[in-house]
Image 1 (cartoon, rainbow, N blue to C red):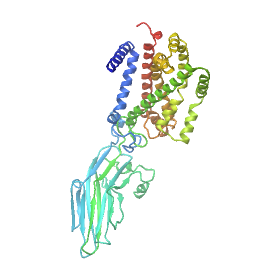
Image 2: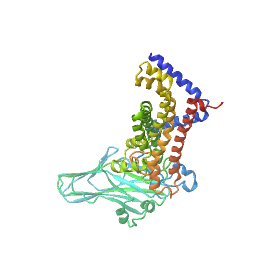
Image 3: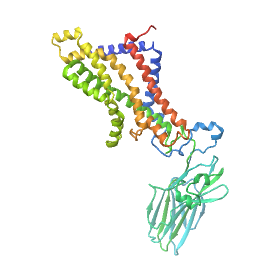
Image 4: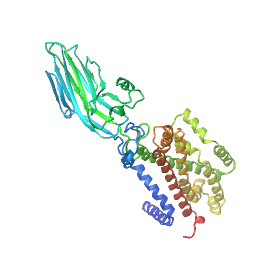
Length: 479
């Protein structure tokens, strides 16, 4: 029995595909939909990074392919420098200082002597910068200080950058540390956006520090100076330096650049496919299911049941959905699944009325009257005689309802009524408007999500029209 039913389903599917081949627009819609489904399934592989990860590059970075144009070819790229024990050049060190490491950690040990003494260790790293001045750079300095039997000793760590012309800027100062301290897990850091750092270096708070310091092409030097004061005795002071990180934030990044937070726009576009398909399909299935149940009960039972259900349906049909969703988002919160439920629960009424009309016409047919005469139950009549007649309408409505749900979700997200934690195309357009992308003419941020919504909705519309002609013989034309 199971094998027979399975073979019948395969035969029906094969016949449907053969019919669909005659409709070029339907095949086009199916092909577009398959591409979207593929992107949604493999989004973690296609998208290069997490869509919500900030600081991947400078804010409002241009797409990488902008480098083919001469005016953008020399914009700064991302520069990542990780400096470990084997990368440092020891420029200066005092006596009675031992420096060793294991490739990642640099361990500096200063032993106490018979007098109070200050020792200095200078570590240097040279790198070449060949792009235009960036707006932003940052650094992290992980270290751990351990003082053994040398109370009164202290250390101080400073970080400098030296330009090709020899000008030196102090980027970080730990101040005096006279106790055991670990910053390996949460490293000390500096950032070119720090107003205090700008003022300390003599610049205005409104200046871009990267443009002031990294404004030359050539060799730059990062220096790390460790000052250690030891007291008299037999103790020691131990300083462990982790991998120092230095980063320049590029203004060219990825396929579609970055947003105002430095998030990857292309990754948001890819992950938005999942949200749109999920919202469209789930909302369509729920709304069609609710409308089917209400329409069948109202049309088959008639009388007072029909009047009550249609009164309730008409009431919801004229209820404005947008103010209601605004109220729900304010008082309950913003959730993707709550948004799906609201879209579904306020879009089933039209299908319920159409289903009721079909059921009322089928209810009075001769074969339904014959089934009642031989004692068939209502459930048997509904599932055996009425529901099969509604199957073509159900399939067509399921497909045709998806574009409306997708567009409504995009509209709600654009109005900041959607789930802010979920990357969606409507959310991308809201962020673009909020961050001023329209005024900056950042079309690569605005047009792709708009086209993605358009083509996905178009795919369902084309497929729905093909289904309508295949399942409804009255609409077929000579081919």
